[in-house]
Image 1 (cartoon, rainbow, N blue to C red):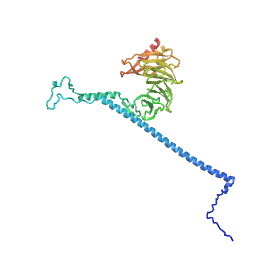
Image 2 (cartoon, rainbow, N blue to C red):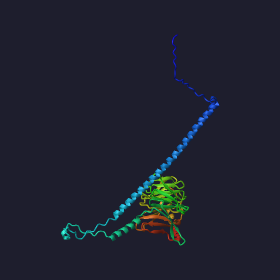
Image 3 (tube, rainbow, N blue to C red):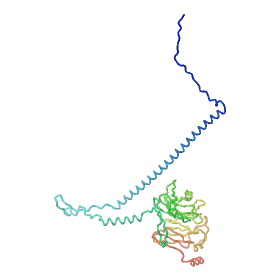
Image 4 (cartoon, rainbow, N blue to C red):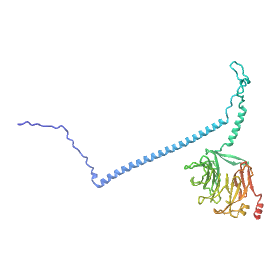
Length: 405
């Protein structure tokens, strides 16, 4: 018999077992339930991701606001530092150190003193130097002049007392630069201050609180003039950059902008009917129609410092080298004598000068003009620090003058 050989394979047999599908997936309702579970899980994941994204956005916005505030603080501190350095350098130039007084005779190395004649004709003459009395006088003069030139960055509210005197009841320090204009709201409860720090502030007059400080983020301008519209919901501001801006007081939004002036805007005034706006600058006076937002009249008065409508809206006062009263009517003879007559305004009507008041101050510069009740008189301020009241002496003379004309 032949030999029988047995071959034994020690490699284990690997059987692939596939897990069968659940029984409930073999039916359509089971499949729909599985799909619903998967969809719910996907939606929960999506909602969680959206929450994380919202949180990240809030943190990023907060970080950006903090960065912007830090940049503003750094910029302000740098500006204050530069101003302090400039003031220090000016003070050092104005107060030079006193030189040492040279002795009358120099001492030689051998202990003897040389005579002035022996020093030769080219020798420097002896100087006494600046004494302590002179330095004190210079310091006092500098302090006085600096106080006069100091720009006021505060707004003060004064109230009357029972004895008839006025006292400061609030000092407002919200501005960081010179305050150039203040205008009171028609309610006499609020007012606005405009400053060269590129902001205007809305205040509660009773409490002295700043309710809003508004800055135009689109451009940096320095405010030099401000006035409320008669209805109290519109504010007009003038800038050192020759731009006139109209603001909505409720939303603090810039709703209109006028250009065309040359030089700093010195004054703005609204007419009582609310249709017209007068602005003054170094190149003269411009009249604007607020309904069409366009300039319809220009008066070329150099160095116009102030414009003012009277309460009726019939007259416009312009303060420059002289004072002019302008009447919006063709029948200017009657209006010239009767300042209490109300004239209806029209864009097409001629604005004729009815009175020119000469400069009585001798300075050649009138700084402001205001009308009295019913335009019976005009109050004029000038550079000589005097206030002049110009008008007719009595109502009887006014009636006689009107009849003679």
